[in-house]
Image (tube, rainbow, N blue to C red; front, side, top):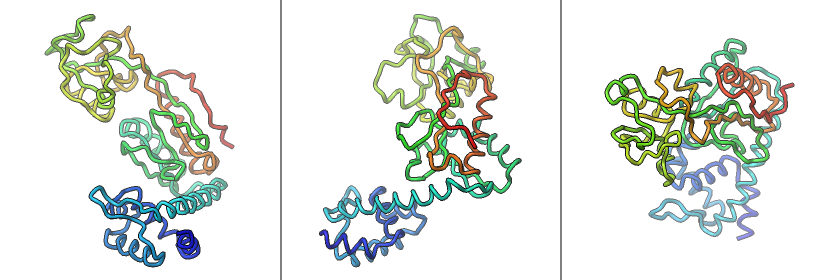
Length: 314
């Protein structure tokens, strides 16, 4: 087995490694093809050629997808080292790039992307038209350490020591309804656990299997009309009059929604964090995008005592 891996070390190129890792992570040829930007047949041929070159089977084809063999497990360790070396090479060379041109990859949520990052992109383009921003608003958290993105703007702070973080906002979360909903149902009565009222909830909170409350009020007497997996959909549901819902105060105010029980807030505030890798912080185009994102949030009402952990731009 060891001889096989040594042979792999002398003959395996980076393109082969990318395909091998993509199959391992996606567990299918179709998923791997989508990840590396090739068609499924090509990925299958490349895997077969790689296994012939190594004289070993790397994957078992099972009903649950592609699973590593013992030889594949050993190959995985070397492939991940090769991937990390390639990532380090790109990141450290880009970290001294002073050109205000090229691509910046940003990942965020759909709501933050629409309300804030889009404005930052517009301002960046006005100043530096040769910088192109690739914006990913999928619900999956991209891996900055593997350079799937250059900047992340998320509601969760990562704990990777190689990542630099900056808290952009801390917003209270209040209870909101549309004017139409209130005309049809009236306001809920404190202490009645939303009896007779319709509610819309953030789906991950429903799936956490804990006692659900809105701004401290139990909701067990209310009717949950819908669970939604993004804050943008939750805002849309409240705005459409589907029910009462918890929303970040500055965002709900922008939408013209009516705040219920304004003296109450949720125990959990809505935090927004910006994250980048320390090797990219002083890449000119990445730094410019960071500055514009931060400026947009600074212009939004909320807690201004942000914990800034990025070193200053230079």
